[in-house]
Image 1: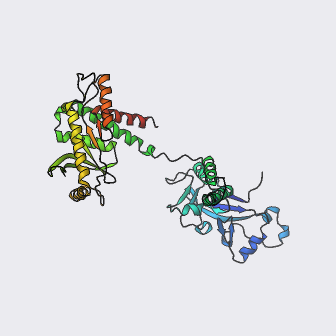
Image 2: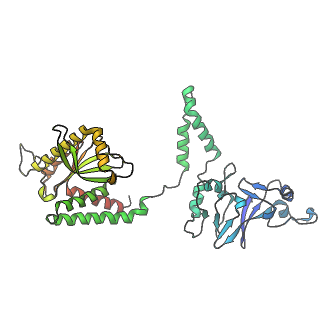
Length: 405
């Protein structure tokens, strides 16, 4: 087995770097004797003060082979369960710690072309770099080694340069090789690290949240006549916003200009999304809202008058909103400035409508089919959602989160 040129050895409370250059160590001691520093792989910078064993006096011809071929430096000292590297040795501005029971190799610290790994990591401004051990901010050894393995090789660097040049060169010549595609394929094969699962950190909280909403809505539907209309609408709005986090504000009782008569119309609620775009929402309590007829008209279950009327009402609101244009945007922004995030301006750009009303759990298959045809015909303008739709959506979200998909 080949002896490495750089090896780390734990010696009591000190971590030693053993250096075995191919051309011997005489030049090292000569430089150190002249108070010069030397760099090892452009990563570790040592002086005579870091020597673990001083240059022996007497005739060097009498030394053993190891003494002639290697030199040891103290690069880190123990603090608790970690070795802490001397800042002047690694030349980074953040502390670098390695677990005392870890077995570091030079590849932990030096990438291809003698690039200091810890310097590159320190440029990302962490509080400190901790490898192994049980510290709260420690990087597990296996994950650290996998990360370091992602550093580009000379071959990858060559491909990167070619990809930068090929974009222009292929436009100016008859070159046919797509170097950018070659680089993507190479990197895709090399990168083995899995992306961090962001959902996992919040999964249990999300399951609890949606289970609560599902139970709340189911309980409301059992006692629907016990809720005043305003209380019912407020609860449903909360559920809608939690299912659609793009909406950052709800504006109640919004007065808009009737573009035909010049009068005023009042919307129950306007939803405002993260970009300031508005949508109209209408919420009907389920016991007041029928969605399709029980009898047939020309062999079809047609939309109930309550549903058809609500759709027409929403379409008129959308018509007047769009006709109001930038004047309306300015007026609404000024009127509701205190309810909006700082600096957000209301925008009326192809607003859509949302109607929440009725139940579908007791519909026949034919009624459900005809209802689905009706709402899909209107979906590009007004989306109709039943309370059973809301229950199903909440249930599907819970199932998906619990399945960890």
